Image (tube, rainbow, N blue to C red; front, side, top):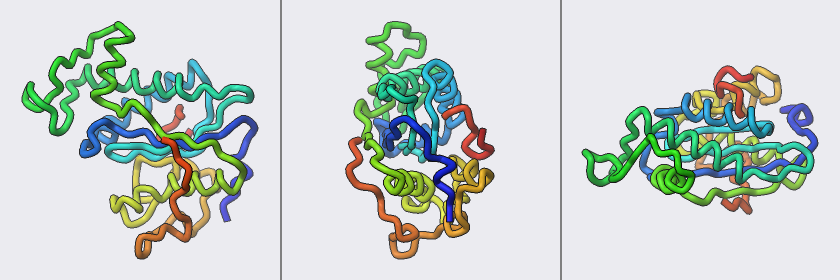
Length: 213
């Protein structure tokens, strides 16, 4: 059985779902290193622990634990989104299905510095809102960490959870907190290892999701 006590720590923990504006796109996996850098820089400014994270082509899920007395996850996500938006603009971001500019975004300008203008461009990359759920207890924590692990299987990208490269499951396998039943997790008949997707969702990262850290 996984030893979740190694993961559980003081401070409030939250589960997040963050979506791209274009739900048909692949921007997150095509620029996963840019996303890692954005999270790394944000953690350096405003520390938080990444307990689990999985990046899919058009959305991501994460479980974070914030420092005691700190619940400002919105500022952190805003910083991550802004950094990612500016960085993909500099490398020639062309969203799937966009209008004009050969499929690009009309009016896209990667050199903007104004906060209000950057926020408008973020709306072309990210959905403005994200879903969050405050973790209630260790069982709730376990369910959401496992949900991150098996999400690529749930969406049909891989047959086994450990086959998806953009997941903290690889770090957690190395740390010995993933049970054998999860390393080769297969979804039979749409049911993920007996754990159903958590409910009540409203809407690290100084680590490579494959190598850990």
